Picture (cartoon, rainbow over the protein chains, first blue to last red):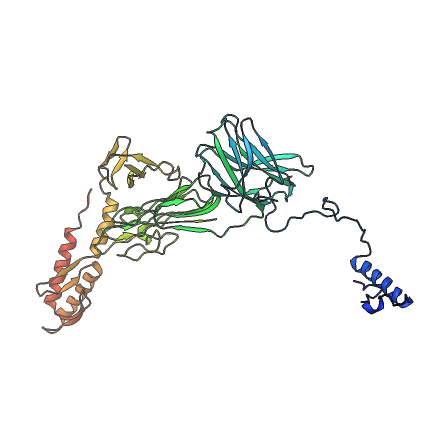
Length: 369
Length: 140
């Protein structure tokens, strides 16, 4: 940039005391310093008496990965338009928040009417056809109070195109759950807004609580949970990637065990998920592993030679059968098993031949989000 | 109790209701408590395990033959599988043509080595052959 055309001069106190003359040099220094300051501020700067925040002279800009302004309700209901249905209430809670010190609540006293909704005011720009990630924490005062959250898509004229469900449940959690959804925007979408609702006509009365609403680029959150025994997955609801390995079959001295099946891929949950892990077995077919009803992998079977078939995977975007026992009882997560030995790693089938019972390896379930 | 059926055979049992716990493509059926893994299932319900097929029996026989071990009166345990029987037959043939009392190094089932003569090998071969013959019959 071009340097200011005049220099700034620091005028000494002695030059402006009561006995000092008004010299041309002093006046020039004062003028040049003003020119210097004007040019330093910017030659095109238009002065205004008050610095306004009217959205024109200056405006807030979104920074950081969350494009949803006040998604955490720390500024109350700013940036949200609310409507309470008859008998309902929409407001701010500081006793059932998940992040910060405030969250939003919607209450209903008439189930048929529902409670109301909050609509985010800002039209968040999106690129048509690309995936955007929506997150919100939800909970309810009772398990029958329904919860609904939606992504509403708009075209370039800000006319509504369509609606996608972030979550829509009538059996709700009474402790906070993080909902994570990755949704493709419609082909003509230019903007998106978020609607949070206690909908009418479904379930009981009470309150639902929302907090931590975010909209951003899709990304994994870095979470992983490994199940080597039965359990429940409740870390997040929504889009997760599950991997399910069935257990390998055991065998006796003259039979073999097939490897367990394998399935892996993205699935969408809207509740806590019961996880079943196929336990290791001796001299029997392998046990199935499962991620609820969304994805399963059966255990291998015990049998003679190639009759010891591998288990199968279902529900994944990748479904792989275990190998048969005659081929070594391998699963996707194990190598083949030599004769007269137990199954290896996870899902490996045992192979007989030595006269003794052998044990198939257990299954495993891994969830990432 | 519930049974997972695959190919008409009970492959797995659980005492926890499988509803909602498994992918819908996996078939679970309620079953009596006395049903065991390996039992058969058809339109008539659950039944005892199906008889072994001839092909399955042949595979089992092959495995069993490969595991034959025999012990001679001298207390030596020999591998008696078909490959070992072939080796013994060749050694007996060769030793028979040699001077009486000639022996050969022979590795036993426990990997120890003895000096075996014709009589020792012949006894082991006969025992192995008899064992194999006893297991050769198959269901028709």
